[in-house]
Length: 359
Image (cartoon, rainbow, N blue to C red; front, side, top):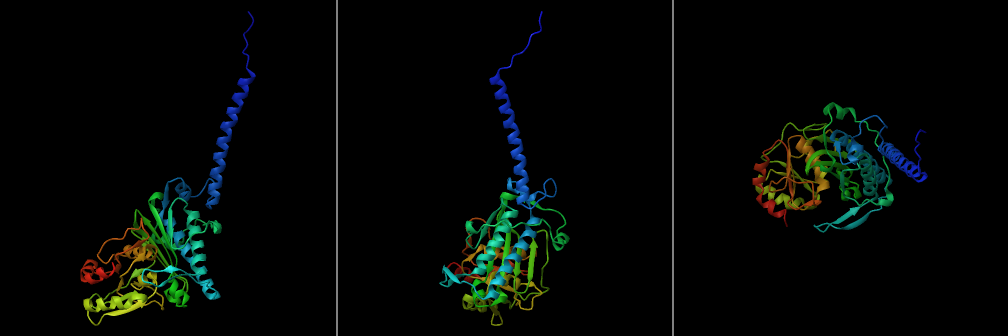
């Protein structure tokens, strides 16, 4: 009996070949996508940590890496701020009026700093939410790579990675704090700031002073390169306040703390927070309390809040409520910042200021 053979249909062979090619195409395209995503984030294919790459897939981010990039972003933004100011070509314009009726100014320094800071952070951590004071124009988009190196001073304070879900993170950028003072060439008040909040709580703060090349940073339950001063005057404190409404605070402060109270008018929320700390900058004034009585944006205060919190200090509304860094971009209830003081006792002393803050 002759052996039986199997006849293959030409159509069946063609279908089988097409299916095989389809499988190979999907495998190869997935491999290429992985290679390109690593390249665009500055990582090494097949080696090195993959924090930002995993975050892009909705994974986790390392807060230690986020701190390193935040410091770099603040410094690079500060370089733009300084370059524009020293060129004396600010291209100053108004974005409108603040709630107090003052001009809300913007300059080339704001715009260029914002571009550097935003795209550095967005390229390194594409999965996290980033809120910034200035508008980000898609036409100006650029890829600014991070070399994935964590500075030694950060590694010394924070030895191990601290990972959190990428979806829990909100970044707040202030590319140029104290724009009004910047236009008046009052350089000591100017800062660039980055804050990282996790589930609405401030955990990383960076405040950079571009004209004195000083940078303060801190991580809650991590470490810092700045510290509190050794003593504060709680009975007759020096109070740092906004230049635009120093008289409003002075009236109530003198009633609360007595005639020996000193009011220090200053520009920039970052500068005011640094006034509470031990900062080796000769141009930095010293204060015991920071009080603000009107509406304020969260990118102005988040970095300072994180730094104070990391050092055991407090920043709350005037009624003592913690500030959440999710949702809206501002707070209505004013703020009170202190360190190494009985914060809640101070809140109870300021009932009149709490009312003023809601006007």
